[in-house]
Image (cartoon, helix red, strand yellow):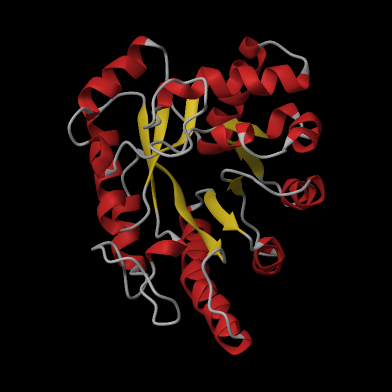
Length: 266
């Protein structure tokens, strides 16, 4: 089975990363570790090049963009601009299978209308060069879209790219728009917290991907506060119950989809 969106490259796993990777192997789990900034993208590539069955995506998350338009948490992961050349160099590794995660996030946004418009434009200005990099390298996009579906659709219209809508949380109508553009839908443990039953029921089997987004979004039945790729069977079982299928069918089809979209060599 394939976790198409993990963050074992994050500091949360510095103490036991090797052990988690070992347990993933023992349970037949492959994973794509996804970058959210340059350093975490670089770490994802390092892991992928060292570990069989593990791959990488490189990109700049919208929450890691330095901005003066909203109050941001104090950390060292903010980037003033998207350095396309640096990320392209990382993406030359054959273990890099996507650009992302990148996109538009309007969950935290300015209160005034004028600043909101500037904020949206600022986010788009970081997203567009990553979209172009994906096109240049013929790689799929891993899209982060939170409270920004209409803004996202405007950017993607006619862009000629494909990929996955990571951790999809929208309506079926919004899901259809992604599907019509050739995108896949990624489902995480958030399906235990949000009503995505209609979307899951109607999502075509050949467009569905499984994700954990670890260390975040741990399913309630997983038993650990920090999520890992080992929760993937729990997510598969929940989807199977909604679609009236077996967990084995969900795992098999989603793995085939991951292999097709990301050109995984397993």
